[in-house]
Image (tube, rainbow, N blue to C red; front, side, top):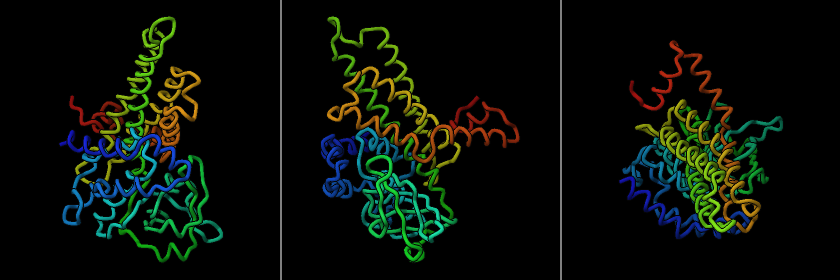
Length: 333
């Protein structure tokens, strides 16, 4: 089933999310055609129960969708929408039409609700915001928008009246951990794409009469990239391993820490092997390595999540690193 599911997503993105489409949306052109194709496919409702019109899958099942969002540098919030709709459906909130992103907000002295950096915020119809111990769904159209950091990200703010009138999502929800699980999966997908593209380039690029991939120094760099990419993929899959819709925080900490660590190394090595051409606007590599750097920081970098894991180890009644690793990976003695 996993192969059939991932193959269907891959075919859809191959047809509708080409590098040319990614570039166009990053440049400010409308996203309507791409989003409509994704909406019509039904993948955004994968976590919504069958009784509500969705597929009724769990987090572990949707890893292929999230990873392929990274593999294809999807410039709209498909992964965020998938997770947000699943969360809302589980607590009985009607699933909104359109794209949804996740954010954490703070109330400023002027009374406005501010979200400092909303990933893919310029492409959102709705924003699911956690603030003041509550979680509410706000319209992106009502927000004051400023571009922030990565070209698709934004700073968003709303007046207090908008927060008061917004649809409340019952319960306590850890959106940061949910985001971290998402970006770990997207990082894993992007890392595999960067590695495969770099490997292909090393086999095609000729120097001194043979492919540069035949040189020992390049082979060493490729082997290091491979180790990081495959370890990151395994960690991201473990981060989503749960029977329900709420990821385990420590598993997510491990996943996000490992994938963020890999992002820095793989991006650097890929550009080293490509030389100056990898940085150019015309070359596709930068579409993925820019995302590696952006997603590495999103929802906490490796340093943040290493601290979470370290504190969990210190708080454990039997602080044994091996026991903690076994609990996170389902490994047995």
